Length: 299
Image (cartoon, rainbow, N blue to C red; front, side, top):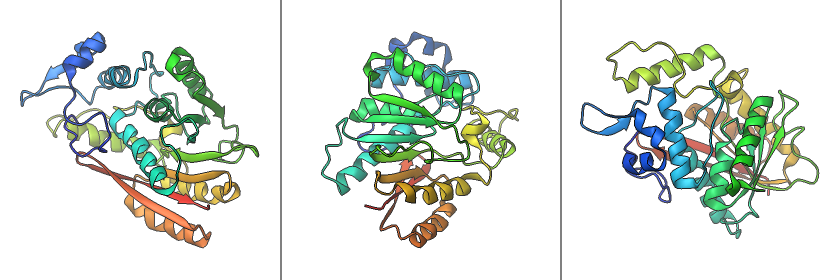
């Protein structure tokens, strides 16, 4: 996780983390810095407190976010991978429009912004985009608003909306007067918390290289609404695609991360059935991890 040679070319996170610079920016990070068995300076990525503090340092050092805090147990996202989604969205706009991608004219709808509000924070700082962040969790919206108000660099760039219909995605959120350049989403990809915990256990044990039996815990945390939905990722994304038809002329590009590659084929099939003229699947790679997002447009 500290050696990331395959991030997007414009990423600020190539190579290993410069812990000297990060600790100078945020001295609290020093408490979590260790030297592993290979003599490499790093942190314990199975420690939620270490991950949270690293994120605070990265956001402050690279993106001028001076205050970033989330309630205990809420999702703590890895910054480099989240920034990559933003960069690849900028590429999508550059290749398909004449828009200036470094502009507040790019208006983005973030479905499931969470308490961390990470995509609006990054997108507004990297490209000066304006955002509307959406969530079904009242506390998540309150914390996101606190983050926005606590950082002057975010002034007027980000707004939030509470989704009062938990079983809806765009319905009840996109208003008749709204026009968005992009929608984006990191969907809940587990069907239950039991599966989420099992997945986290595998990750933690991999980080510890099987040397210890680490107790079941979510090292990146996450509430049930952030991680799970009935039917898992594919059910959520099929509903997103179906609802998007109603807002075909209000969003230029609908997009979402897809964690499971086997979900791409049924999504393409559904989009074809709905006569969606433009569909792209864009692959991203962060070190050993390969991820992707699907994008579709009716325009």
